[in-house]
Amino acid sequence: MASAEQQRRCTLIRQPDGTYRLTFEQAPIPKPAEHEVLVRVRAVSLNRRDVYVLHGQYPMPPRPSLVPLSDGAGEVVSVGTEVTRFKAGDRVAALFFQRWLEGRPDAETHSSALGGQLDGMLSQYVCLSEEGLVGVPQGYSYEEASTLPCAAVTAWNGLVTRGRMQRGDNVLILGTGGVSIFGLQFAAAAGARPIVTSSSDEKLAHAKTLGAAATINYRKTSEWSKAVHTATGGLGAHQVLEVGGAGTLAQSIASLAPGGHIALIGGLAGFGGDIPAMALLHANATASGIYVGSRAHFEQMNAFIERHRIRPVIDRVYELDETDAAYRRIEAGEHLGKVVIRL
Image (tube, rainbow, N blue to C red; front, side, top):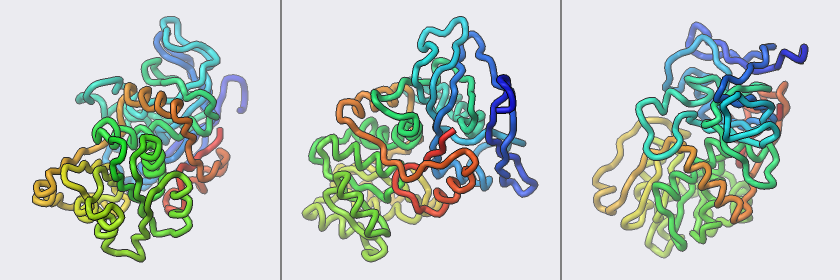
């Protein structure tokens, strides 16, 4: 840092074509207001959403500049005069939606997303509302804690909160990115039967070490929905963690068991596409749109993580000056688990 009053942070600058340029700058260290907490951010992690934001492909109002990334963890440096939830020295992670605390999201939830309509976590210091933070699981490093706010909460909400996953459920996990690996770990810990797809035999082998009961290489098995039924004795998947989008949705629905649930999350294989309503009706299935989750979901997940001693799978840790390389790794889809930047 240039002085005790300055910090280093990353900023995205909007270009005439609607994309953003990644830059670094010196900025003042903020001071917390009455109900705010000043956090020294120690690590952040990337999600596919961050690549979409960089390329101007994410559905949000354009901003001339923004601090990127929703996911980060660090230590509390100081607190405002009215803060009661945290004290200096506490280890915390930020909520993706700063104002979604419990219950259903409301009309203002989307406008409280970090790294989008609000400045995000790729900054050495941030001031956040005391309501927009949670404590981190016991024994977690800052790098591990930084992986939780988006990917882990999304997987938890899709499988547990909305899907009501049960012991013995067949759980179809698409891919081996951040959300998918957390879904695999949660399913295995809950006594369910995870089935993982990937185009990489190496990644599928790793998935087996994390508890995958069956694996499918979708490059070698184009009609992988049939392989799901084969792997489940003809029954199909009770839960599907659908991170693909338009390119995978039809086969994901075809993979469902009667009465199954599909959690609609991402667009790795393209956004849009039609939902085959008759296929859902025929299977007596349900579909849920999942957009991360609330603070209550985060805290429930953390309790489960501690109880089952789940540790995040970190693909690679970069330094702040290597931020470009971290983005490129996510965009290339080379990672397994989470990509982290240490600040």
